[in-house]
Image (cartoon, rainbow, N blue to C red; front, side, top):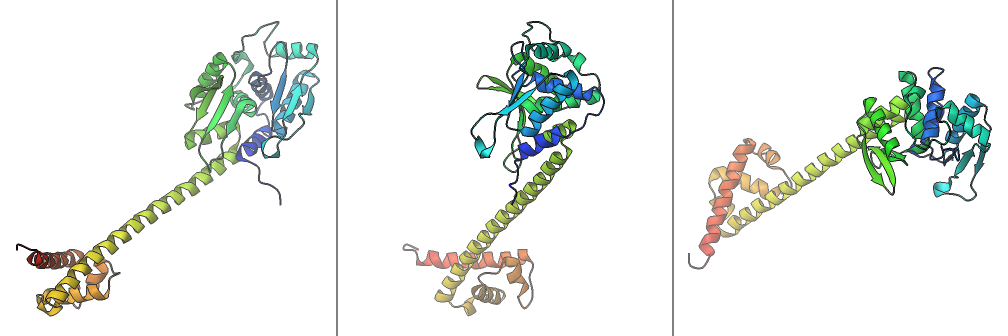
Length: 314
């Protein structure tokens, strides 16, 4: 039986297979992958990822756009859930310089910021964000919780990305964790929006379906808990009524009661599990719930008076 892949792997696989919407989109997507890969500098151009489709897309785009040679390898040893860590590297210094120059980073420039000239059209914005998410993003299985994030190594770059995502109509928030800058979403609707925007439409639909199932399950649990609580209250109330009637029966007898209370008292003793509404419905002359409640309160007062008479000093 084929092992079910994680939701995060499903998302990145789907994003890796999205075809460019225009000739500039591949450029924008590649730019997003380079910029957020933690390996885009004058010293190195490389990427490390557990996702084989992502490393393949990274290498293919660079080769197609620049003709540079990209070496793909994987580190020995297995990681969590049996995954491998893949590494793609541009080893030739001339190729690295060519790539940086093509994307607007010349010489020894160390400040890494988003260059808007690399993102030509509105459709390219989605491609750029898709590339960024593939290399620095993650999403938790929505069956557990709703959480999507980008892990960015530099403060200025994280601020640029936050402004970029917000400008796309998605209100992303920021924090820090272990020296990295985190942009995150916790609302399911916003996660659905960003997945759809980036091109992971099927994953977004799956998240919606999971949310519907969770909402229905939670509603059923709430109703069940409410019904259980109501049943408990009904049983407790019925037991109190039975205790009162048994006291009256032992002291005076049921026939001692006023005629309009005798049948109700006898039926309650014989039907301890019935709700008040059900009890009132089986009377020879059915009563409303409020009418039955009024008579039971009279029985309770009679029982209380009998108890008080037994109390020393009365």
